[in-house]
Image 1 (cartoon, rainbow, N blue to C red):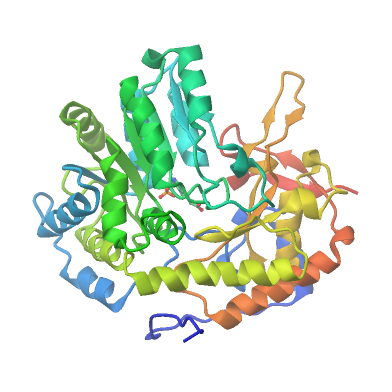
Image 2: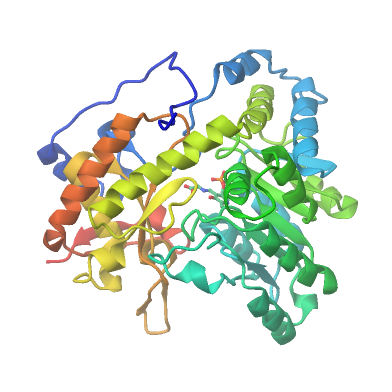
Length: 457
Ligand code: F0G
């Protein structure tokens, strides 16, 4: 059959609250043009993130009831641990309450002033946790990844030549870790190829630099490898995942993505000494090593979700539904990142709104317009999120001005997605009416979460 259907039936539903354009204009103004500050009941279709927003399966809900809440040695932990050991081949598993807690613990253990953490592209919380220790985060994305509108199969790849050069310049002893983000969220949800992971591993091994994987969306990445990389078409998703993790010394993961959980994360690794240091920090900040900031029921839900996410019917539907939205927008002329990412469609706001300069945050202006037009909440991944100031307080813009429409897993149906496409296309057809924004208040780190803005007149 040609039609790819949602591989589930719906057992429980949540209402969507409708509002009007006039109401949304007032809501946006009161939220200082920052969509993080809007109440979710004021949103019709919430594409702010695919993180923690998944619909859990009936099996996961059953697991929730079976969660064992013992402080130490809960069977839910052993189920969680064994599942992660099987998927990753890594023996040491440390639960955390979400991905950034795993990052905080890892980088507090290995970061520090004068150190560099190298990546294809660091996610914002990862970068913030690195920089908080005084270390510097370095993105060495491949050339294809820097051109949103040019399709290529593995635009999340790291640039191995740039990595070699960076090591020669800074010295391997100053690089305590390389971390590859799969899929590359900040670079458009684009996958990393097995070949690239192997090439990066070879460089890491030659210089004794541990290689970690930020594995939030490992199953989506594995499915892209199966689809696009020669030699993997007949391999299973668990087989591809296992190979991918076999090249790494460790991983961090936010279970709020590819584990279909509403909360949770973990660190996994081979190195006993590093694990000992991480567990010591875990006890101070998260909890005892057999629960690490999670309830027993969460550990169960994650263990079950990690197995469900590798089912091919699910991954086929998942990747196809993102591509479906992307194609509809492309056909209407909307500049979207190509090819479609694994969890989101990224609109190139720089291309769509050439009349708004980066210092007026074209991505944020577009995200606000999508909200006013149809109650869609998206997120800016551009100069509001990543822009920095120079010594004269002038904005150094981010390399790309993107707006991400992240699709929660198993939550929205095809007609929701058709509605999203209609709203985006309407906004695109009236794009010259969109005005830029300026910041009136901001925090020193991760400013996009709380910044206040106003329209530029
Ligand atoms: N790494 C990547 C690649 C991520 O996308 C995220 C979260 C994290 C780490 C941190 O995980 O939220 O559990 O602490 N990304 C979310 C997003 C927030 O919207 O893309 P967390």
